[in-house]
Length: 171
Image (cartoon, rainbow, N blue to C red; front, side, top):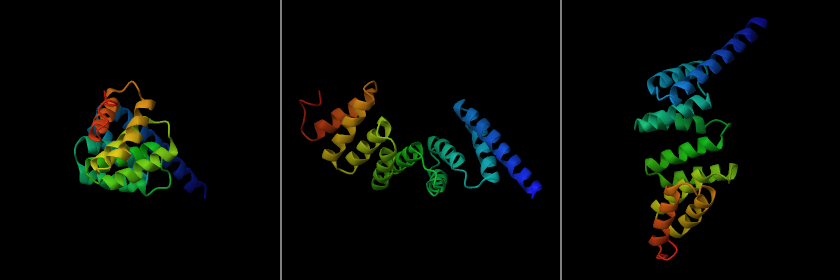
């Protein structure tokens, strides 16, 4: 029993070190290195949600949507879902034009943290693309309240207001 416990401890340490290296590589723009390191983490712990999540971000940036989807589905299948996981998945489904799925995931993100502009902005975008213009207004407005320094949230809110004929408010 002692040898098994020691082996598990070593695996956990190796996984942590690899994940830390992968994060550093990803943050430095060394995506190929980061991808290789995340794959090594997944070789040790196939269901590791952070490795799947971070790898999916790189794959989305590289427009490798089928591969990204596999990793998104993997981290969504875990019980350890954080706001950022929902945001990444919601953004992915927005990009691949699965707007209803995007709205569903971003709703979950907002339930976890209703003080972050990102899920409100993304959900407003998905709702607008679904043709639910009036519904999108509430989410764009909230994103401007939470991140008044971001011009893109104001621009999107203004466009949404104009789309429903509220031109005076959109200025």
